[in-house]
Amino acid sequence: MKTIINHYKTAICLFAAVFALNACTKNFGELNTDPKLVTTPDVKFLFTYAADRLPSSTTEWIWESLEQLMRYTQQVSASPYELSGNVNSRYRDYYADVLPNLVEIRHQIDQKTDKERYQKMRALTYIVGAYYGIRVTDLNGSIPYTEAALARYEDKFNPVFDPQQQLFTLWLSELDNAIQVLADPNIPNQESYGDADIYYQGDWIKWVKLANTLKLRIAVRLENQDGETTRRIFQEVMQDATGPIDGDDEQLQYMNPTQAFLGADVDYRSRRFANRQMVGFMKRAADPRIRIYFDQNDLVGAFRDTLAKYSVQLPDFIEPNDPLIMYQGGPADWTTDQDVAQWMGNSFQVSQYSRYFLISPVNRLFLSPKLNGATGNALHVLVSYAETCFYIAEFIQKGYGTGIDTKGSAAEWYDKGIASSIRTMNEVAQEAGSTTAFTGDGEAEILAYQQHPQVALGAANDLERIYIQQYLAFFRLPNEAYVLCRRTGYPRTASAYYPMEPFNEPIPRRFWINDPGEVNRANWEAAYQDQGFTLRAMDAQTLSQERVWYDKAAPGFGEGN
Image 1 (cartoon, helix red, strand yellow):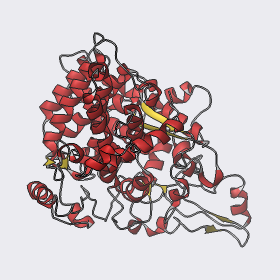
Image 2 (cartoon, rainbow, N blue to C red):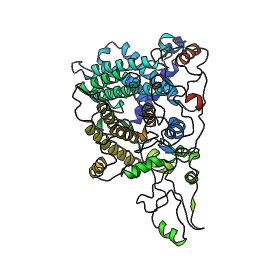
Image 3 (spheres, helix red, strand yellow):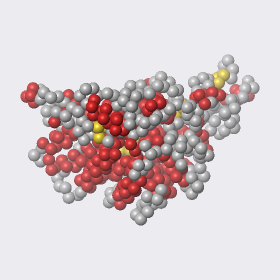
Image 4 (cartoon, helix red, strand yellow):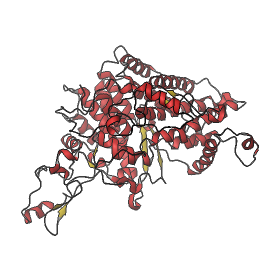
């Protein structure tokens, strides 16, 4: 189910949120006596404002995802660019737009004389805070949380940086508490965010399911450091009375019909192209999502007649009889194969009248549905049913479900994940006005893909197949794809199934937090020292050698077992 945001409420909540942020000052006297200023913002609008910031910003998509993370994970083939100060916008956004408004909601509720009627509304703020906090710690390790956003209430301008291990413990506790409150039918007369909840319209049970899936997100991150805790979390989620997300209509998603999203910035600095390993696998497996993820090259129509007329042959890397010849990918690292890389931005000249671009670009409308005056809509799917299914399949395959009812086998959850991913990507493409994987219900295409020998479980490499389907499903969630590749070492360099290509650039394992200035420099320096991080390091070589806590025992990129 897609949710369309109400922009009247967004405009109001923007005012309220700006108040909350600007109020972080030590001088409260004048503010508290000025009748022109709102001192009691409506918590509904604060929630909408924070929730509207959950999808990755355009800044994050351009500077982190398309220019960096999607190259590192080899989901796209693109020109390499230096790391710049524009990366890590997620860190800035968390503390500017998300966490302060969540803390203000709790503060406002706690001041109410009938605060018991707002318990469930308050509980939701912890789920949103954990969702975004996980993404921030993924690339930063220790971050302020327990003392963050308290300047307005306690004159606390120097929050400590909480270690990542403690953050996960705290978020698990907060998620458990939220689940208990939200799932309790005996808490009477509860107020609701209603339509101000742009994801679930105040449906408490859907928020419970999201919280349980977020626990699985934490579980996969903990595995390399603490497999027993991963097992415990998985079993808790599977035995919970409500459980995790269990259908497409329970995904954390919404659509903003006026948002330009990436706009022309989708091509900022250069075009992005398909990666040849991904294209090659999708062609071998007859993956219907290939039509969604990538545009066709120019080898369509009567191009063969033109080639024959001028007695010209295509470059050797293209199989002339390939029925899907219109999809071609480039090398992950352009320095490794100049014979192919030369065609990334250059056309193949057949005659003075005919030329063809050979490498398939990334489908720009899929990422930027209002590009060049197009009228599509950006449907954001932030936590999906497919993700949930693949985590469950992975954990069952690893034996973590022994002794409990997993409500299906690894293969059954795997097939559910595949089906949901294809359906969801097709819906995103439809809304974007882009090419789609199928028309109608897609059941035939999905079943054929599930049963394809390259896809179906029952082979010797079942765990690898589960990883690769997660990887393909994360095409619109670059952070999750990056975390998957970093924690598992898949795609694996030596794999005969889906190999990672040689990549000569150092791949950062973390990003950096800028010096916060004198007011909190001591805490920042202490956190960096505790983690073994180099202060003020912003070069890829250093960042590739320093890891956040949960990543320290993980394999190298491409070095999965």
